[in-house]
Length: 471
Image (cartoon, rainbow, N blue to C red; front, side, top):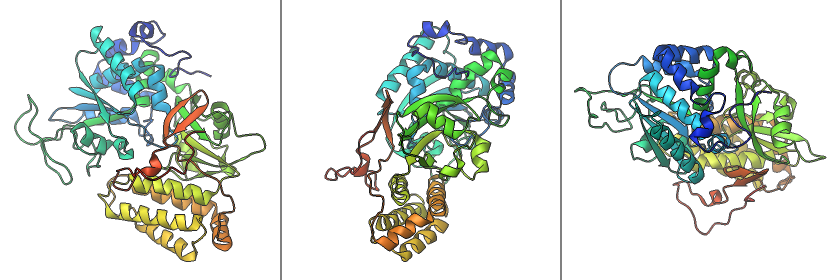
């Protein structure tokens, strides 16, 4: 199978990148084609955003390029806070140069005056790698028309939400705005509810403006040089008609060797778990798979679902950013629901009260059920909050809570009934929150400090983490 985003050996210099099959050729072809034809090529490729939503990349580019007035900005989202996901960090470690080339092509295509690469400050290795790549591109005269700023952001999950990411770039907390970046982007001079206007940037005309801003994921931009160098037809020769190309997937949890791998779109999920994560332990079977915490659970009966946007949609779930958390038959699904709900309730910013209050209440009732003191009233309370947790939401976090918890309740009702009847957990076992700190050599290191995090995003120095630090 063709893999091109994850080279066998890391590429650690621009010279090494430029002697690969496609290194630097994407920029040259984009310049030959011109901005409009470059966008058309991306449209024809069928590339969909790899940040989780799967929105057609070329369509997003065309929409931003068509905006009039103000300045245009480009943002690369590399915050990667979704539990179970490590693919962007793996890409930056393997080849940061394809990302920078993709960034340059995107900036050229949409006419961006400035670009920002956003990573968490804790991603020290990745920040060093991409900084070196940008500097080498600039020294070689390849990246000179567009200023590139690398932003080291906070640890919070919402830093990866595109509207909150713009706030961080502007020096604020990661609190999502109301309006999307393509409507009101960076340093906008037109004030709107939930954010502040800015003074005009040098060269801007008088009056208010929105400064259309395009946000693309690390993996999305990393695909661009290959598509431009080899053509849209080449990219469409892989994957499915609705989900062309390959995808970089993470497999963690109850697998023998957690890892990141590149697979062709349309590959069955069962095969991905075996190929990337080396499958589950002998004698164990897969009970459930979560694509991060944003989508409905995939139960054992659906393990042959094609890893594609349309495949997961057909079973009532979503592929997300292809970070798969695998749980085997020893797992308590009430405990899984509780821990994922707690993650979301902690990471909720509190700007939308139904989200913060609702997710916190759902978490508390799930904890009661898991610890054996819950009853039918707890189930009724959870059901009530699930109907209202999304009221007035300005980002997707409350929807994640609603979709994820509801799906577990539907898929595993007997386990909730068992907890109420037995007044204990029949499958006692510590589950880790798979928020990844590192992933290498078949070992996933999880954030052991997360259990000390409080709802106001501060940390309790006294609380011991109940999770294992790594598997």
